[in-house]
Amino acid sequence: MTVVLKLGGSVITEKDEPETLDGRTLTDLADAIAEADLAGLVLVHGGGSFGHHHAAAHGVSTTEGTRDARAAMDVHGAMTTLNRFVLSRLHERDVSALPVHPLSAAARDAAGDLSMPTAQVATMLGEGFVPVLHGDGVVHAGEGVTVLSGDELVAHLARELDADRVGVCSTVPGVLDADGEVIPGIDSFEAVADLLGGSDATDVSGGMAGKVRELLALDAPAHVFGPDALGEFLAGGSPGTRIG
Ligand SMILES: Nc1ncnc2c1ncn2[C@@H]1O[C@H](COP(=O)(O)OP(=O)(O)OP(=O)(O)O)[C@@H](O)[C@H]1O
Ligand SMILES: C=C(C)CCOP(=O)(O)O
Image (cartoon, rainbow, N blue to C red; front, top):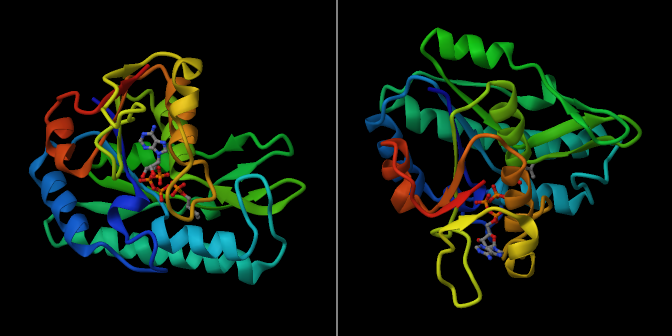
């Protein structure tokens, strides 16, 4: 059973305070992960206040790039710092987590299509490790370096690894309707397009609308849920909003 799980940057950081961790929530999520069956689990985390502030400050998005290596390193460096925090919380709980940094492995062609090998991720899984990837900068033909979102990585990994389940843990308990209630299931983008906004915080990669679009394109069932429901998802449950 292969499960791809994203820990939203807005969950594990204080998204409005540059480079500030939400240590308490990250600890709770690490506890839930440590209690779960870890075989086949691939983790991805987003940028929150580590990646998005730097990307926005340099005018870099998923489509607008930079050829300034220092700007690219501001984004990448902040993301590897956040990745170290996530890894250390997992190691403290004896989770055999190993990092995979997309900047050094991935590329986009001129049309923006992503390529990234996944043999290292599959081999880590085969050897009993938990790979931990993250949103990052990515070299992009014709643009320099653009942003690769964790949501895009989740979709890529789910396809390449033929995942059985996908989970996206965000600040919200699911995709919300106009009354703020969790929508149980989404089968088409058009049906919910008017409800989906970007993010409340600085976010260069599309917020909830981008997430739903990526997840709908997958074969594997995906769930969007809040931090309280991570244990339920990892135990095989279907919390929040089911997508696809
Ligand atoms: N209909 C909706 N239902 C739920 N959330 C919505 C909706 N429309 C917009 N949003 C926003 O989407 C946000 C979640 O997307 P966001 O990209 O910020 O989360 P994340 O993946 O946890 O963070 P990051 O992108 O930093 O990894 C919510 O906090 C909310 O502000
Ligand atoms: C801004 C960066 C580098 C990461 C974007 O990943 P996301 O938070 O999953 O959208």
